[in-house]
Image (cartoon, rainbow, N blue to C red; front, side):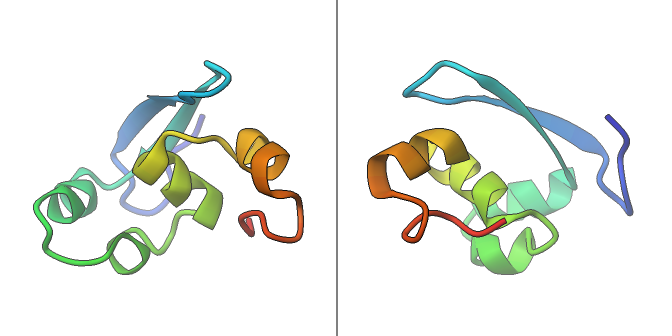
Length: 77
């Protein structure tokens, strides 16, 4: 995996439903700001896809999200 821009950290998330592991490149400062309630995830980590942000929020991968809610109500990439 290649880091783009100032993404300096791989954050590994395991989907709580299917157990698949996903690596998300992000800027650690942006992640820490989100964890410390210094802004909304969609603003601080706007360079991630909505699927990647949902994985960080709920530990639910896009495939499982789509199985639960369908494609049209699923997360955009």
